[in-house]
Length: 94
Image (cartoon, rainbow, N blue to C red; front, side, top):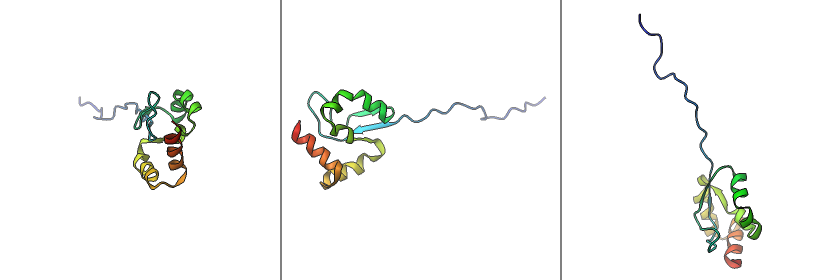
């Protein structure tokens, strides 16, 4: 008898893609480095960086999804907007 089982139909649970966030602000020596990568939801990342964000609130604004890094860096270089202001605040107040 021939098997009626179809090939490739075994359902494998699909894993959700982990959320990836990148810190695009200036490096703060001993605290956080430009380009630092964090995995998890934005809330999990903020919880991990709670003490840093309490001391430097602009760090939160400079945590962006990995898909928006290039766009955000262009905004910082442009020198206009909230992102650029947050970057400059950290640069001047570190």
